[in-house]
Length: 492
Image (cartoon, rainbow, N blue to C red; front, side):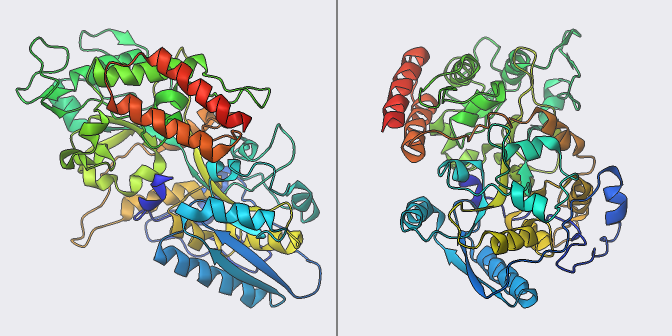
C-alpha cells in the first residue's frame, strides 16, 4: 500500500510489558502518565513462561508484504532479531527481505517451494488476504502458553478470526479512520466545526440542527469550496476551472476506501465465496464521490490532485487547500505539513450508520511452518514482549493494546521541532480516534479476501483511475463493467 512510504514521523510510545522474555516496564516519558496508570482501564496482555521444543532451529522472517522497506526499518528489524536470539540461543532468526513491489510474487514462489518462511510481517489485512488459507491458526498456541488477550478490544481480536473460528494473528498496530479538518477554513466561511463526538448533530448556517451524514457533508463541503474570485460552489458565477480551495478529500489509495467502505461494511465478494457483487451502499458512495468531483466540484479530479499546488499526488489535505479529509491514523505522520490549526472530528453516517474503515498491521505464521512453536515465541516477542515498543516505533504504529494508547497521544503532544515548537497543535481531539474503533469494518474489512487477489486489485485500480480522471461517465454502467471484470478475475 502507498501508506508505508508515508509513515516517517509518528513516534509510538508504549512501555514494554512484563513478559516471559524477561522485560520490565520502562519509565514513562516526562509529563506522561506512567504505564501502570495508563493500564488502569484495561488489563495488559501477557504471556506465561514458554517452554518451546528443545533443539536448535532456524526461523525465516519474511518482509515485506506490508511495511518495512525503508533502510532504517530494516536496520531495526535486524536489531530485534539479534535481541531475540540473545535470549533464545537455540533459535536463529534470519531476515528475508524482498521489497514490497515484488514481495507478493516472491512469497508465492516460496510457498510453492514447500519450504515457506516461518514468520511474516509486518503485514496488513490486504497483504494477508492475498494469501488466504496460508496462515497458521495460533489459537491452540495461545491456549497452550496461556496468552492473556483481555487487554485488546474484542473488535480487534475479531479482525483476526475467520468466520468466528480460530485466531490468525494477535492485534499489534492499528490505524482507525477519522475526519481531518482545517479550523481556519470553517471560521472564514462562518461555519460550525464538524461534530467532535459520534452521535452529535451539526448546526447549519440557518441554525437548523441536522444529522452529520454524507448529505450534510456535501452541503458543507460545497460552501467550503472556493474559486479564484472568492465564490463558493453554491454561488452563481462559481468557476470550477479555477478552484483554489476544495471542501473535501476522500481516501484515495484504494477504490474500496474511496468513499465505499466509509458508507458501509461490505465487500466485493458475495457470501458464496465466488460471485462478484457491487453492494448498494458502495454503489451510492461511488456516485457520491463521482458527483462530488464532476458535478458539485467539492472534490478535486485526479488531474488536479497530481498538480504541485495540491502536493503532486501526495496527501492533498497537506497542501493546506482542502477543508476536510477522510483518512486513516497513519496520515498523522505527515499532517503537520497542512499547517498548525487542524483538528479531528467524527466521521459522517450513511443511512443512520457510521462505518470507520480500519487498517491494521501484525505478524503471522505460515501454516506450513516447520517450527510453529518457536515461530510463536518470536511472534509474541515482537507484538507483546521486549521487541514491541521498538517495532511499533519502526512502523509508526498505533498500539492495539488499549493500555498503551493514551501514552501514544501524550507523546505526540510533547513532540517538538528543532526550534522547540510543538509539532502538533494543542487540543487535538484524539479521543475520536479510539471512539471510531466501535464502528470499524471488522466483519467485512475493506481489504478482505477476493479470489485472484492481485488481478482483482488491478481491476479496482483501473476504475479508480477512470472515476477520478474522466468526466461524463455513467457510473452505473461503469460499475456493471467493473463487476463483470472482477467476476472474470475471480473465475480464474
